[in-house]
Each structure stands twice: as structure tokens, then as C-alpha cells.
Figure 1 (cartoon, one colour):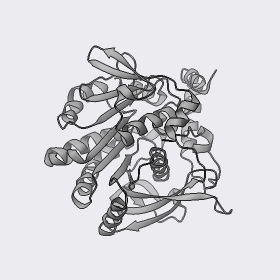
Figure 2: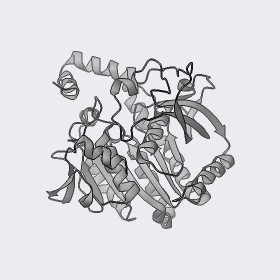
Figure 3: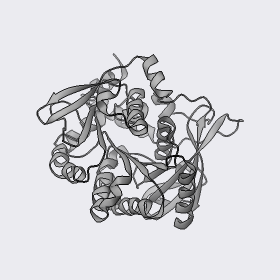
Figure 4: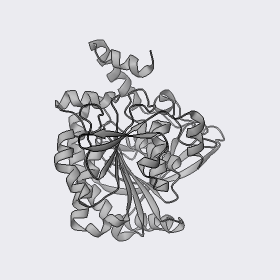
Length: 378
């Protein structure tokens, strides 16, 4: 029995639910960064905007907490080990549970520098102007995620996608506890105006020509709402959006189909929706809410004209099947083909067209390791 099947079987027992909750909680435990060795790594700059409280802690894992606060800006550096493979399916234990994060072996947050907003946007724009395509990546994390972990995910995405411009992590005040889902939903809703303001300033105060927006899980709710607000006021900015990824969206499927998608597609935005039938986190969210989630495949799969839906159920994923967008090699490679090279789904390796009552969606079929390596090396 593979790890995902084992977890699914556990979820049907009360003991299993306790074990899964404990394990998910361990994912967020603080792990010190080991800088005691001469590490072989490259430092990836990641800009950040956060409305979490600043604890002032010297331990970077504890620097920003889960309380609401004024918006702060800054620049962090994240270690990418030398020779770290692109589109790499990082092992669950190594990514989440390493007792010490040695930057020679693991992606690790190295330092944090706070900036006032003027310096932040100036430095962001300087890095933007130094890139040949003037593109930038913004990542919005989901439920149960710390600031430190969101920054590492942002760095890994930028490294995997090999985008030339700056990377920005928007980190809202997730409580980073499995038991605090309702708190996260409330804090996310509170944070939406700050994300809207950030998008507007990126368009107004920088020279970005292609903005790539990647949101995961609960974070897709914030990105969708912020985009609608920002573009309703300044619709001309849609021309500077290079691509939008809604990965494993944790929002009501019918509400997305009926209310949110029409508002997004009205702006003719390039949007891809990644879904899976093996996402244990969304299965739990569906049980909690009583209705299917937009990131679930199967009978309730969302197909909307103007949005490309990709069923990633057959792609590899981490233990809970929820982070395939950043931990699954094939999904990462598919995102890279679209965002970097503008390859439409009909021409992307590993996707087949499937007819649906509401149109066509795309199902991921397994590629050989050699095929994946070839695409990742492009």
C-alpha cells in the first residue's frame, strides 16, 4: 500500500484522524537552520509582503506570527542547495520534518530584512528591470502555513519555473494550526484588501510586464477576490498579467462556478485551475463545509469557459496529495510549459483532452522520468 492509500485508510478511523492531525501539526514545528557548516548553496532573493505580527525573534522560523498586524515589506534570502534538481518531488520528511535545515541539503530561509514601502518597490523594480522579460512571480499560500514555509515554497516555485524576474511571497496571518481552520478563514478574509492594494501598487509603481500569480488552497479565495477588485477599478492592468494559477482551490465549487469565475473571465485572464481527486485536505474541507471544493476532481469537477481545468489526479504528490503544485514534478513541469513558454494545454506533453458537459478539460497522464527531466531542463 502506498503512502497516500495508507493515509486515506487511516482517515476512516478515529485513531487515524488523531494521528493525521498530529502529523500535520508536526509539519509546522519550528526547525532551526543549521549554518554550522560551510554550505554549498545559492541564495535566492524573495521579496515579501505580510500582515502578520512581527515578533522580533532572532529565530527566523518564529519571526512573523499569526496575529493580524499592519502591512510590512521586506526582502529575504532563501538557500537553494547547489545542484538541487528542478521540478523536484521533494520527500515529505525532508521538506517538512527535517530536525535541522542544512542549506547544503535543504531549501532554507537564511535571513530577513525589513524595508519601508518606498525602498521595497524601488528594489523590486530594479530587479525587474534587470530581467530580460520584466516578469515577476507572486505566491499566495493557503491554510496552516507559516511565514517561513511560505517563503521556502515561493523560492522553490521560482527556482523550478526558472523565471528571470523577482519573486514575491504574500503571507497573510495563518495560525499554522490544523485546529484553527475557522481562524484562518477569518484572517484570510480580513487580509484581502491588503492583497488588492499590493496588486494595484505592483501595476502602478513598477514596470512589470508579465505578472504571474500562483495561489494555493485557501489562498485562491484571496487572490480571486483581490483580482476582481483590482481589475474592476483598473481593467487595463489585465494586459500585464502573464498567467494565474489556482492550485487545489479550497473554495465552494458551485460558488466559484456561478459567481467568481464569470467575474474573472470577464477580464479575459489567462487562468489555469489545477484539481485532484486524491487531495485529502480538500476531502476534509468538503466534509467540514458540506459541499464540494473547486479543487476537487471527479463528479463535481469545475469546467468553465475561459479557464483551463487540469486534472492532476494521476500526477505524483506529497503525503496528503494537496501540494502537488509545488511538490509534484509533473505538475511543476506543466506549469513551467505554460507560464514560461505559453504552450497551450492541447500541445503540452502529458495532457489529454476530456469532454465534459460544460466543455473540455485536461487530464494529466504519467510521463516517464526521462521525459520529465527533458522538459525540466528546457
